[in-house]
Image (cartoon, rainbow, N blue to C red; front, side, top):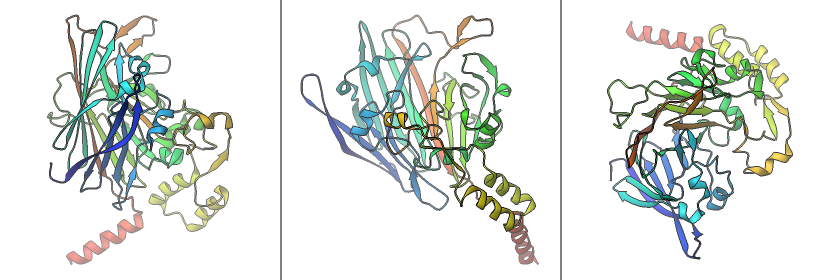
Length: 408
């Protein structure tokens, strides 16, 4: 085993196949001495847990995943945290149509590296898919995706629903993030390829999400698109080992100090704030005075009286909550509210996408090879870290004075 990393296997549950036989679902869990914990199922190769430490060394699950097999089976198949197949820019429905017991992947453990493999049969076309996962002692997660198909290229990547504030933080935690994407173009909701500067927030520069959504007419809009990553490559080499490559996505949550950077050799990344999900029982405003005043206080040292007025207006130390009940939607997802509008970020690397240009014609971002069999080989790495806590100017002055006195 790798120093500082352990990998254990337990039983997550069992399924029954078409012949009435019991099929066991295994859960594989990595644990690092630095406080990261990752859990993956043999069912759909789904990532169901991702515990990451905060600035105070307290770990929290940042993945909006299920706790039990029964809960997993009740989720919408478009929202699961499993490994999703993609073909011709559209996620293939082959895996979703298969019997649930046939979606259990075969595991092979090599030290602290896990290999999960599955065979997909669709008529005369067969696809063998493998996901290899490893975890570094430095709290970096590496996923290697491979497919070999007798048909056209079948691409594979995990769909992740994350919230660095914690999976139960809800929209309030989502709005508090700072987001940055290494992308110069994106495909909008009408499938037009546009420049990043045309987006609600030009995410080439780090943007505070709450302010960005406020500019998009409040909580009714969302941050969504398929972004063309500048780090994409088809070399097939590990994304963290290539010289000079930068991250594709960076998420920062200042409250907890958690930071994650995504490195990949996929050319595209689907990223949005899950606006298409049902509303929470109480919808939250995407912009609230408290955060703005706290940011200003770092520069102008606003007095406690102004903040007390804001407290009275907002009704306490929590962020503004407005009544906006949608009881008809609550039963579609988990009752704890983890799968609701703006509850986190959807992150899904993509290998290909069909785009519609301004003239109405279609074109593909990548042409499938004609030779048979066809292969797909790609990497995704998540690198976790911490950011420093923001300090007021007065605290900075005191720190500078103490340093100067020490020098004297």
